[in-house]
Image (tube, rainbow, N blue to C red; front, side, top):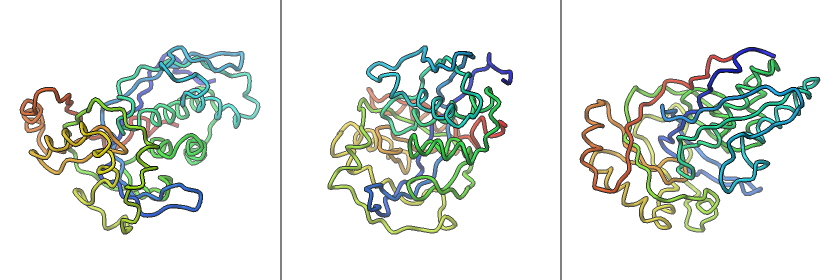
Length: 282
């Protein structure tokens, strides 16, 4: 095993700078185009070594059985491919800062960080491509966090073309709504035929989020947040919601916008990241 067992491991949130549904496969999976951008809002994880092969969760999530928790599932999937390493286990500690059900990818990011960290700590030496393949079995957003760069994603979220996103801050609002992703994608009102574009044709400010109208109809609080943010620019919902954001080229302007938001809207100023904090991990 490698060292670093006393380290804490970041799991950053993401924003979808746009999100189009461009079709649907025969098996029901939706075909998407989106740009992922990491931000400095992050969960943190810590791992303790075990020599009994068990994966134990020290910080259960209320309402989620341990066997269904994504970080437990990620660790166990990694164990399956660690030939000869089955005696290695870990106790998992998760400190949550990313709101659940917000479209920020917190669970997927936690799973990706678990795969990256334990691959390193257990000394498995698996490539990022292999880790991305494992991650895709856990959820469509997991591979992008392993990939580690701002990227134009296609398919069900597994094909990447890296893009450059200028440095900026975002005002991120968190409506008091937990939006179940499946409810959005199952809606008969969801638009599923937005024309596809080439990655080279994407630019900052392009497009929209096809899931927004469905989420706003089901959760009026999301619509209220978007209306409030649109006073400052081209506001959008991220992922399947509920969190919403608008970008600012100057940090001072973002701070002033938060102060000007209507009472009762919970907002944070966050910064975009050029790459995932664990991008250089081997």
